[in-house]
Length: 331
Ligand code: TRP
Image 1 (cartoon, rainbow, N blue to C red):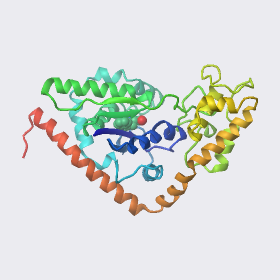
Image 2 (image 1 turned 90 degrees about the horizontal axis):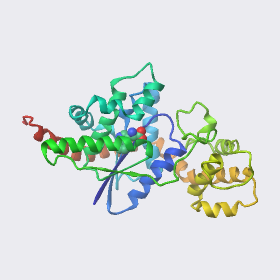
Image 3 (image 1 turned 90 degrees about the vertical axis):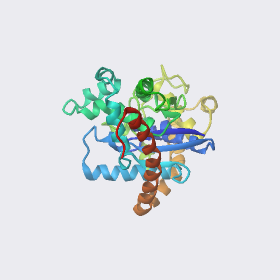
Image 4 (image 1 turned 180 degrees about the vertical axis):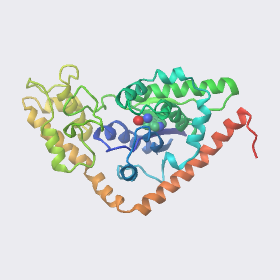
């Protein structure tokens, strides 16, 4: 059995980019009988940026419901909130003592986020990768499916784990980062050279997986393309059209080449409408299931509790192993 671990922050909305780039992949990994999958809502990471309490709670429940609605199965996989398993924060402290300030200072995401949140460059923001390393190492993870922007964090996780192992012997399993499918990076609909981001101030740039159908269609219709008229996959010169083709390819299950042929002689307008419709169709079953689940908080909480207990059973053992290796007195 291979252990797969991944997590997503329950902040703001879940975007089409999150769905195509991450969650849809988790879904595929869960379907493989040789995988044992653990998926977390990284809600301890979320407060590195200030959250309004009522909204934070609402987002967290909404993300949990979305994971289930999108087809992740709480019986097959472990699906839980990071904040419900105490070992994450605990291991993160221990790992801090094996992580150099200089290493954290060099992290690209830390530098970016410090720029963006200059009024709140808190220690958590800097320590973010160590908590993420704790997440991964607690579960003897083999593979971590992530987007390219998280690869640096996986690298540092491996570095920290190997450092610990070189001091104490075999404490941690060394995980591997696996990039989510190539071409599955979804770009902003208004600036197709930038990643679709939930923090984009322009709502027209971002599709929420919970957007109303009419809103989704409208956003695709006003997607930025270019001044040519040819529908061709060329991310360099035609980022907007290429982004639409990528999204349509995922939503329709057709290859990009097939789509290029289908759209020969047609206009950008056709591509925009077809992409919007395909996305609406793709999200439809999920939305119905979401509506049912979000009104059943008791069920969601019982799944989350079960997930947390199963996660904790694994995490406790790993933490104990490390503490014993360090030399802590155990009772
Ligand atoms: N930092 C990741 C992101 O923002 C989320 C995350 C937290 C994560 N812990 C993780 C991803 C562990 C993979 C494994 O996308």
